[in-house]
Structure formats: C-alpha cells, structure tokens
Length: 617
Picture: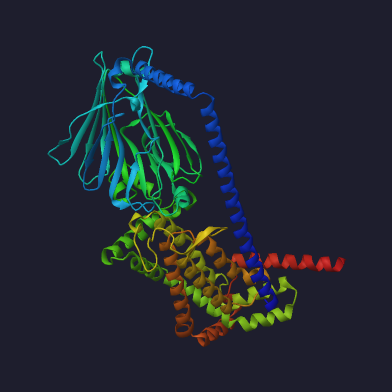
C-alpha cells in the first residue's frame, strides 16, 4: 500500500470512530430524555389520580386488604392457622456457607458463600433470596380449596447438632383435621448441599391423584464483572433419564423421561434441585435471559411432578447452592460435574482434551506454583513441548519453501497470466523437491482444538476467579487498562492490554511467515494473514485475561522457535543439497499420490477449457 492509501485508511478509521461515538452519545441522550418524559408523565398521572378522590383510594386499599385476607383464609382451609404470621428467619452455618431458612413456606431462602466474593459489590456471593423467588408445591386444604406451601407460615424447631457434625432444622404446620407437613433440613459440615426431606401426613387427601406438583422459580443475580457476558454464560442444566443435557439458546424444555436434578447455572455458581429418587417424566423448564439494565441474569420457572402413594410419605430432596467447582460437583449427584463446560455440542471433541490432559497438568503446576499467571505460562510451555515434533516438521517445510522461492519466482515470470500452467508446474516442482505445500498449515490446525479446549477451560475454571497477575486483577475476566464512557461497536466499553499483546504478537508472526513464503499476486491471499489478527482484536477484548495471556505466551514461544530453528537448527544449504539429490532420483522412485494425480487432471482440464475459449474468441 502507498502512502496515500495508508492516510486514507487512517482517516476512514477516525471517521468511523467519531461516528460510532457520536451515535452512541445521541442514543444515550435520547434514552435519558425518554426516561425523563416518562417520569414526568407518571408523576402527573399520580397527582391527578390523588386529586380526584383520595378518600375513595384509601377506602379501595382497605377493601382490597380485607378481600386479600379473606382469600388467604379461605384458601388455607383446614390449615387456617398457617394462613397468617410473621416471617421468622433461622440461620445455620458450616465452614463453607451460611444458610438462611424462612418460616414462610418452610424453605431454604438463601445461601451466603463464605469463600467467594461478588465482583459486583465486593460482598460474599449470595445465591437465592430474590423477592420473586418461589420454591414449594400446592396442597388441597379442603374438598374445594387449595394453597401453595410458599404462602403458608410454618413453625420452626430449634436447631439440633448431630453426632456426625451435621445440623438439623424442621418446619411444621398442622391442620385442624390432623394432617401435617414437615420440612426437615440437614446441613452437613464442609458441604454446599442441604438435605431436604418433605414429610406429608395425609398425603392421599392433600394431593390430587397422589401427584406432588413442584414449583421452583429463581432469578439469579450478577456476581461477575460483566453482567452481559455472565448472562451469555448462564444456562439450564439437568439430568433426564440419567443423561446430562442443557439448554442455552432455547427458552423451554419439556421433560419426557424421569428427571434426577435441575440446575440454574451461572458462569461460576449454580443453584440445583436434586430428587434423590427422581421426579416423574412430566414437567418443564421455561427461562429467558434478561436484557435490561438490572443485575438479574435470567428468569427461570421450573415445574416438576412426583407420584406418591400412601397416606404418610417422605420425599427425599437435596438443594445445592455453591460453586461450579469440578472436584466438588463430582461428589454430588451423577453427572453434575458436567455443569462445568469443558466442551459441548460442536466443541464436545475438546472435552477429553480438557478432562484428561489440560486439567491434570494445570492442577499439577498449580500445586507447585502459587500464582496462576505463571501456572498458565508453564501450561503453555508444556503444550508447545508436546506439539513440538509436528511444529518442527512445519518449520522444515517452510524452510524448503524458502529455498525454492527463486525457482517459483522464475516460474511466475515464465507463465505470466497462465495461472493453470503455473499451478501445474509448481506442483511438479514441489513433488520433485519432496515439499509438502500444506506443511506450514500444521501449527494453525493444531491451534484450533487447543484454543477451543482452553477457551472452555479458562472460561469455566473457578480457580482463576479473583486471581491477579501483572496488571490483570482477575484472570477469569478481561483486563481493562482503559474504560470508555460509552460503548464502542465490536469492543464494548473497555480496552484489554492482554488482548493488545496477543494481537501484536499475532501480527509479528504473520509478518515473519509472509517473509518466509513466496509472494502472492492475489491481494486477498496477500493480506489474509493480517486480517486474522485484526479480527482477534474484537473477539479477544471481552474474553478472560487467562486466555489472552496464554495466547500471548504461545505467540512469543512461536516467534522464538521460528527464529532459532530457521537460523540455528535448519541448514538451508543441506536442504538445497537434499532437494537436488531427490531431483536426480529416477522418476519411478517418485510415484504421484492420488491427490496429486487428481489435481493435475483438474488443472489439465481447466487448461484445455481455457484454450478452447481462446480459439472461439
């Protein structure tokens, strides 16, 4: 490119930057104006409504409260004593968490994780406890009425400590006819799971057709740096028919087989309902990611069903509120460790790489080195060492291509615009010299499965959460050296330094490789190696700094290996001598491969077709 072209592209980039900045600024201003207009409109409406008849409003409120009280009393039926009350909170702690239980609904309300802090507010991570969260089931309170246990007030017992170190808490309600419900909770030491046993006395009358219709509504909140990225990582995982599955893009799932557990999975934490002896095949999950400016990640609505027989029955459940730690989840219900995304769907081929290679090696280095940034560096060195034989082969192929460069330049001059003739002679030259033109692609091909494996691994590895290295305060999130007061298209509102180092080192590799390969007449092929690093800049900017740090280290190792191998290990004179020796071998010793035969046949056919067209002209 000449000087004028460079200046033009720079000016165009500046214009684009100013355009997007101005557009975002105008959009934000318009949103603020709309919000202010709505606020004024609502305020005027409220004032006008108050002026019309404040006495009627007060009377209507009192009448509504009276009707609500009557509705609750009637719905409670024989459990009328549990229709009203004051919510009582009971807390139980172990080494890992602080569980808060509520007498309203006799439920586990929320869990505070002692060893994890929320990046959103620097407080302990709290799972559950949302004002709209619901967990319970419907019971018949008379022949004509029913109520949700969520709306009934249970009586809590005192917390008892057991011989094994666990703690037990029970909530109870009793009907006038002798029916009763008991929710028993057992909190074990050093465990994130809470056992929940539902004991129904009179189940044959409280449940229609013996079906326990369970309802669970949860609204997980932000705990990571970027709420938008955390929402993208949120999904629903479940075990249906003893097989793990999940939904991420879809918004609903109807169960057709017995369900063992259902989990609402955030980037690094999850809330999971487990049925120790399974739910029935009926049930469904409806959910959707939030798109507003709140700190709520998604709205989740789970309905499950269980068939019960007998008058007095016990339903053994378990609630897990804790981290997406592979080692911890491995000890919970079957397949819960698969919540940790080590590779799914079209990337499922990388899961064995992560499970049997990356993870054990990472854990080994982590047991030796305390800083995870250096652990990633050692992991990178290990990966490059394992792949070094193939990498060396590709460098050797590149060296042969460099030796043949003068002859290929001569062929270009000889054939001019005859691309078919040039391609055939080029393949003939490669065959005679024993050169594989695709040999240099091996490092790029190797990067694909390794990159996808590490993308999944670093994105889901909770051990990196909150770990600092160099200027990065959290290796599980992007490292921002500049924060913009607005959103930049393709970048977001920040600039990551590790992204810059990864992209710059990728550019250096492209420049080095272009210097080692023959020049291209096709502009698209000529500049293609530079386009990829440019795309990486936009892709990497929001990814975890652990991944961009790995990519930077890997690129630096690549540059070092290329320089050392090309300048101190590979002898170009010897390569040239071997090529000449190979050329002198009898042709019968150099059989063509099937691919070469097909390629030459195709090129020959194209050449004849072109000659025919020229004759017609």
